[in-house]
Length: 169
Image (tube, rainbow, N blue to C red; front, side, top):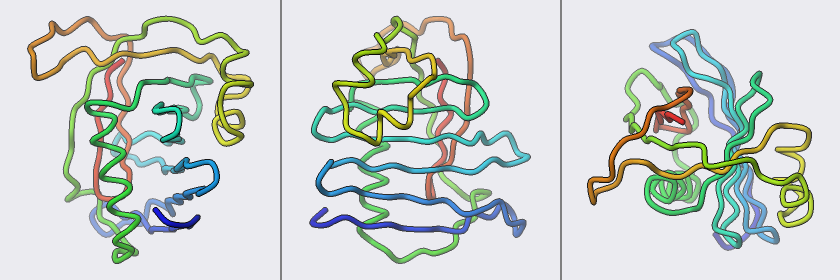
C-alpha cells in the first residue's frame, strides 16, 4: 500500500450486529493491525498484526493471555494477501460473516519466544500487542506436500473482513 490508512467495517451475522472491526496499516512500520470482534457463533476476538518487513504474523487471542507468532508464508501469507486486497479495494462497509468463506489452517506450537525478541526486535505495534502475554512460535503442520498433521492444543475461529479462519494450534 502506498500510504497509511484506517478502515472500519461493521460485522454482522445473519442480520445481527456483532461489532466494528478496525484495520490500520502503518506505512512507516509496513505493518497491518486488525482488531476483530467476538460472536456468539464461536468467533473469538483477536488482534492480528502482520509485519511485512520482518515477514512475521502475531495473533493475540483476547482473554487467553497468549500471543502466537508465525512466519509470513503459506496459509498466513494467503491470509495477509486477502486482508491487503480487501483494504485496497475500500468498497465494503458491512460484512455478513454468516456468508464468509472459511479456511482451516493448522499450526503447532514450537516453543516460547524470548521476551527480549518481542520487545526489542519488532516494531511498536507488535510490542504493544504482545506485551505481558505468553508468546509462542508456531509452524504450519499441513502443507500441499503432505506433511503429517500433529495433535493440537487449541482451536480459535477468527473472522477478518469477509474471510474466517479456523486456526488449530
